[in-house]
Image 1: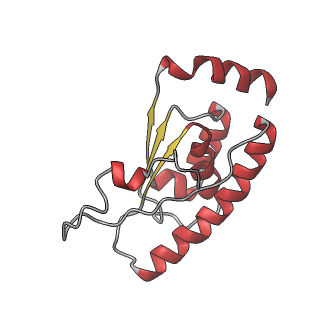
Image 2: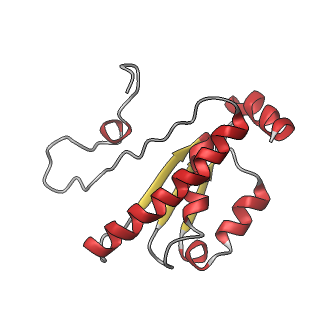
Image 3: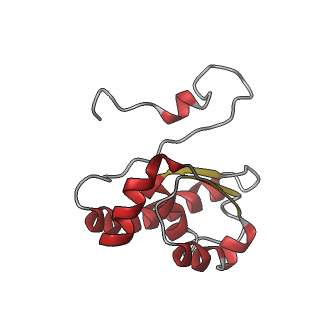
Amino acid sequence: MRRHCLSWPQHLGFGSGFEDEGLGIAFGWNAQGPMWEARKRAIKAGHALAELIGSLRQMNPDRPIHFIGHSMGAELSLEALHHIQPGALNRVISMTGAAYHSRARMALDTPAGRRAEFINVISRENDLFDCLYELLI
């Protein structure tokens, strides 16, 4: 990890030492390089995420599992929805997700996708990236 990488769990309030703070797991993957290569790695990482979700669900079937992804990180959750049991992932929060509408629709139409709450937060700050993504991928 480079020193400038922020700790998402810490900035979301995890690691504060409170007894009831919950559990936060940072799931990292290599999103660098050409967009088409990063997208391929995102799909592979989505398979790994599905395995992790399955393991967490086995360890504690009653604990809700939520996923927060930024930009192309949303691809991980969309891919994972194709490979997990219905109800295994409770909520997906996509922040300026870089994924095609059709890809999101297909993932949300899976049995797991129909059971998950999907929140898509968008802004104009990614306009240049979104345009490049549409042109190149």
